[in-house]
Length: 150
Image (cartoon, rainbow, N blue to C red):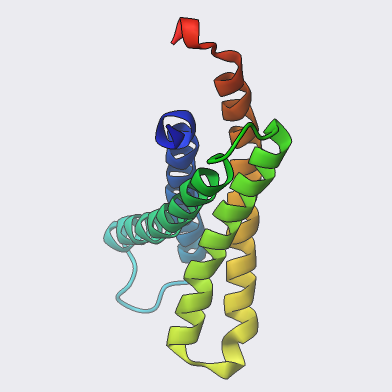
């Protein structure tokens, strides 16, 4: 039931995460001048693919956390649209941040905590910005469908 109602939101999270990851890695490749031997189209394409994969991985964890939070929240009784949007956005944000907090811990550099925290915060903010309005729209659509029209 949750997947049929909110699966589109999870798909949107993964799509936007992939596109933003690819765009950020391309931007990094353009802003930072390449070293000798790193010029060319091949590295540019590789950076886009690698960034898309990193973004898709982060967004997949965010989408999974989103779906789990929606499953837990909508399990009992009717919940308001606003509460579903907040819970869904919070779950997606927590999932996206968790990825980069774990990467920062695994990297084990106490001097780079602010960098990993900033990346985690950016990913959490992006996931919440995508998930909250999309969840509200999906919840309104699910509430407007009556059993007779299903």
